Image 1 (tube, rainbow, N blue to C red):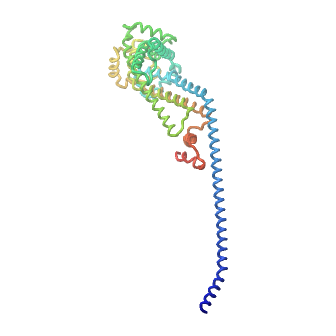
Image 2 (tube, rainbow, N blue to C red; image 1 turned 120 degrees about the horizontal axis):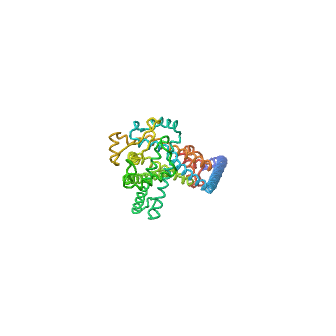
Image 3 (cartoon, one colour; image 1 turned 180 degrees about the vertical axis):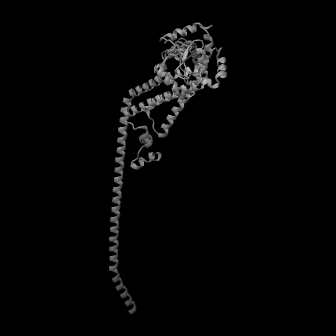
Length: 450
């Protein structure tokens, strides 16, 4: 019994000793919990504040982007309201420059080319431009620079006459003057027949214009403005027999002229259509790759594609049909007693004396006496002609580009291409920005493309 009592005393005494220790540990644990909770609350507050700051920054970024887009839309709307008249004048200017280049600036090289083609006894063939330069200098010193523009009036009159005949035939017969990809086969055949009749009626007048183009100014009388109509009419009326000497009758020139003219026209039509479509598709492909469409320059780009397509078609056609043109010009000039400038040196003058029986005889005689290169006499003048033509178009396009950029305040093409500004403009206008993206994520797509 004593031992049991003693054990209970020891147990109660030990229990009374450990109770203060448990209270202290509990207090310490509670204080630690309070401190940790305070730290957690502070961390939560900081995270909330950072989230609020990020949201506010994103809202500021979105508002800035919306402001920039709205300003850009206002500017584009203002430009769209102001640009149509300007763009119309620019397109008209490009068309006018191309027309002037084709009819006026290219005429001196056409004169040199035709003089080389009809001179069957020449020693120099002038297959490249370098051999022509000394002759041009000598002609300028002796006769003046205006000698290279001889026959310009008659050439313009013949071209106008051809257009007028096309218009008259189209009104009388309802045949189409122009064709496109939607033209039916029947209408296309009618158009070709219209061209055959038009070319056949213009052949005598074209021959008279050829004489005025190649004859020497110092050895011949200067023709009047409307002499081309008088000479052409006389040659047309003497249909079945020659007007004088070795001149071929009109019926002998109609067949080769119509065949060559229609073939050249159809070939030019095909090449022009193909080249224009390729250039337009290339332009649209470039715009699609960048993700933007330049509606303000569509008209100018389309006009440039047409001009370059026409230039490519004309160059290809002239190169391929150059030998046939040489033969036709020699047949048209035969028997006219024309004296031309000797382009072997640029000083003397020589008469043209030939006796061809027809196109086949002219081809055989030329191959035998001059070789195959004789069919390409004056090819260097054509190279000069198209080199000047391309240079004028390039200068005109640069001027139009500078005017357009100055009006629309658009950066130069080199800067646009280097910084990929078209891509940035196209994608910024078509991308929807959520409230969780940052400003660095906005610029990421264009940085990857650049």
